[in-house]
Image (cartoon, rainbow, N blue to C red; front, side, top):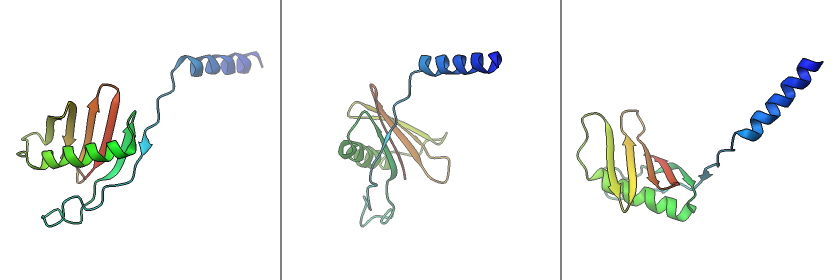
Length: 112
C-alpha cells in the first residue's frame, strides 16, 4: 500500500515538473493552390499552427511552398531555405512531402 501511494505521489510530482507542451491548432487545407499547372488538384494538407493564427499559417504554407517549388531539387532530398524571416525545411524523401516553417517560437507544418 505504501509503495502504491509513493509511486502515485512521484508520478504526480513528475507530471507537475514537466511543462505541458502547447498543442498545435489544426487548420483548414489550402485547396488547389496551383490551378493550371502540373500540380493542379493537389492540396496543401494537415496544416498545423503553433503560436500563429490559422489564416497566417495558411498564408505561410501557401507562399513558402510556392517558393519551394521554384527551387532545384536537393541531392539529399531535404530542401532548406528562408522565406520572409521563416526558416523552412521540406523533407521530400517520403511519398508525401512534409514541410516545417519556424520563426522564433512560431511554427507551421504542412504536407503536399
